[in-house]
Image (cartoon, rainbow, N blue to C red):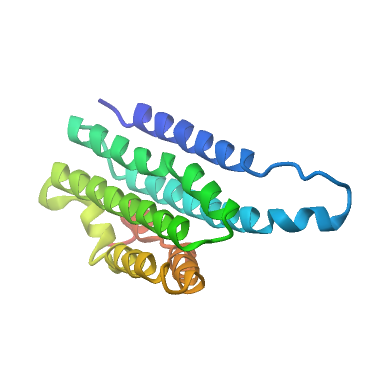
Length: 194
């Protein structure tokens, strides 16, 4: 099977996830600027989740550039990733509506952790299917970001019960790490990195 159907399906699911997240931003009652104040936590959680979904979409897109044929294991691993991403609207809304309270912040972190694990599983399945000359393996190298992120998420989940602000700062930190442009796959696919 070619990768086009997997890419199209994944892009569609991710577009729906973003749409559902923005629907959590309810129109305030009132016309003053003060009527927006209660929406600030919901808006901030939306921005963080939008960035995360964007990061996953971008990296998923790049990762699939290394794939020539799709296996059944890849399909299931991709669905596993999409499952965890599909929970973003729920945990984003819950966390925002409850002003970053400990339990919703911790559950948000668990979903981030599981999405990171699911992404790693998909990445490893692609690498295994391509054999020892895998373009993806060559591109990700030691993958320090991929290894560090789940550790930071786990720490953030624990911190959510002591200081939800430290927890949120750790979630933002991981997002910032991934926002730094990572051109490893582009270099390998483009033949720049030999």
